[in-house]
Length: 294
Image 1 (spheres, rainbow, N blue to C red):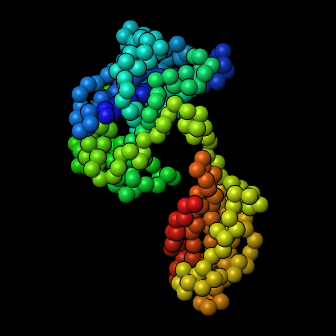
Image 2 (image 1 turned 45 degrees about the horizontal axis):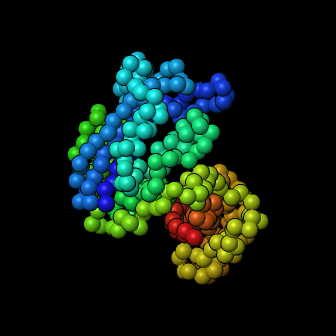
Image 3 (image 1 turned 90 degrees about the vertical axis):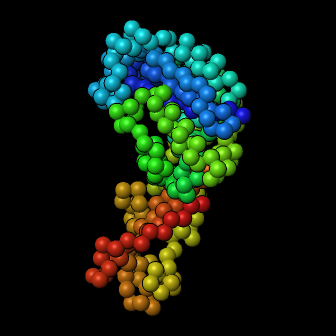
């Protein structure tokens, strides 16, 4: 079994034809690892822009790539994709987070009208894997590549990052450090099927209607975090910044507190975040976080 970690750089380009911005891919970078997670090959290709006529300042600053460099040294998107397909072979493809997959889907859809990625058969979100291996998985707070490398004691140069091949290599070093900490196979998914694309293209959203059938009414009940007894809601739920807020009263402790809860609809279900915020003087500004995921 071999693994290929792909990293992409892209530019927000405005298409007059489509009348919208497209995350136009401008660089492919990848590293191939063997079954022992040792580097056996690398891949790099600049892409000649077809949509945008200039690079954003942020892209130029982060990547140090110039528009002239892309025009002079870049190849057609499909030429780069074909070369990468050969490089990938039968390896499992990985990316740090799913944003690169979204960019690939967007580019294939723009150029061909078909959002399917033809070379993708098996896929692993390396960001999710590393967070699970480090026991820091939280879908709402994703870990950056640099943060992960620092936690693992991997030295790297900030100046070399934000180029596709360098980021792919650093991702591979993180994987090699964690490969024996958590089963990699648990994060590898079949990617040549419609269910994969439904998952990738699903847009998470916050539920802002308490009558929505996805909401479990039990999540709207709160126990006192001091005595543990059921508290009584004394004011109606009100929505503010995607959170529902209400005042509760604990008769046993003779104290009031504010409860806060949010419901985020994800592909796999609803993620519930519940918090208790004290309102009495002694505990003002203290928050007790209770994370519940269903």
